[in-house]
Image 1 (cartoon, rainbow, N blue to C red):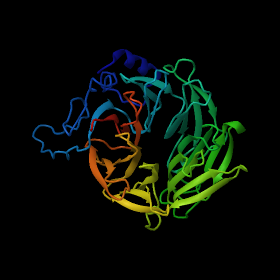
Image 2 (cartoon, rainbow, N blue to C red):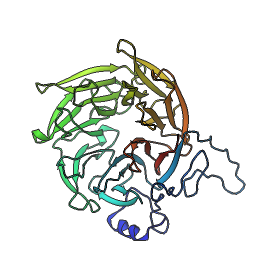
Image 3 (cartoon, rainbow, N blue to C red):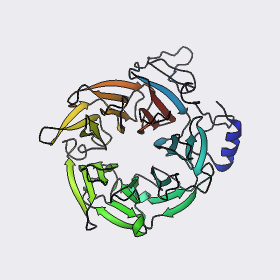
Image 4 (cartoon, helix red, strand yellow):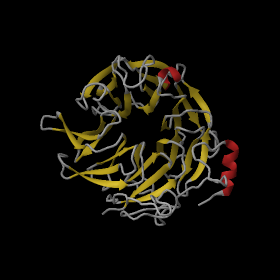
Amino acid sequence: MRVKGIAALLAVVGFGCAAFAQNGAPVVGGSAPSPVPASGAQAGGAQGGGRGAGQSGGQGAATVPPPPITAPFRIHIIVDNLSGGYALLATDLNKDHKTDVVALCLNSDSLVWYENPYWIPHVLTTQALKMVAMDSADLDGDGIPEIVVAHDFNAIPKNSVGTVSIFKHNGDPRQPWVLMKTMDNHLPATHRVNFANVDGKGHGTVVAAPILNPASPGFPDPDHLSTELWGYRMENGWKPELITDQNKGVVHGLLPYDFFGTGKQDILTAGYSGINAHTLEKDGTWKRTFIAEGSPSPWPNGGAGNVAVGKLAGKQFFASIEPFHGNMAVIYTQDDKGVYQRHVIDDGLTNGHALTLVDVDNDGMQQVVVGGSRTKANLFFFRATDKTGQTWTKQLIDNNMQANACVSADIKGTGHKTDVLCIGGSFLKWYEYVGN
């Protein structure tokens, strides 16, 4: 679907996340959610129409058919011409009770959100260059979340400024948003950022995680330098506070989650130092708790790159990609004594980068979605075969997606997050669960 009016508007303001077709019109795949399938939908392994649907060839060219899609998801292409799709959010941005999608692209000068159900694009801001991460939370209670963005990024710390900024709508969320706050200190190579409820009072804390120490020459960080984790609490005027300096080398995963069941969120990190939780104590200090080593291989091939926490039949478990940008999907389940045991459920990932949990059946048995960013047939759906989570089945979700990030979402407004959204390369896709 070519939207010439929208294209003209975006050409004026600088629509950086989507590359333009030759006629200058951004090609926006997708249409209304159920019952009308999106343009370019694929289901049951059959390739749908539209650009980017996995067709290949050229006159007389020999082609190798892609592996069959086996996971029970219908694929909707929301956008197929992004430039370095890297991160996404699934949240309602205009108070219409529909889940919209924000897409962040590495090679972009615009942060863009797509309005459900017709996926109309709106430029959120052009004030954050070299973006790499973002999160959302409704800080003022008006029903529309604020967006925190990590930008001015470079993976080599000496070439990175490292800026963290919060943006707020200016009355009409379809119009460009205004800069609400830029944090006072710069953190070179800041690569992850999240809002968090660290005190049980609300999500008024921003947590920022550089990927490396400012003095590091880059990967693999041969000197094992400390990589600091920083927080900014709204109640303290967003003043920077050091959460920890105990993580070493790469920190790639950042997850706010109430891991210990105390009613407030701990900050989980995943990197060369494994998986660790960081908790704000009653006296205002931070406590670091070791959770798991991750891959036991020696530096820099050990540790973990991502972490996600969920439930299997009411019992907490967590999943990870190991090591950083690794090849293994790993599950940690509790034994009878509550000790987490490590289970490698797959070791065939290529540059593992995307990890999320979803409960497609809404039965309390969460499934795992894992993807990598270097090959096309590299996005998988894992389902536990029983309540213990000792063994898992594996199915291919997409044979034309190099996923950098995925999230679970309720796109159709059913009240349950049974679908998955993923972004990577030129694609932003919605995977609609169609299983029994």
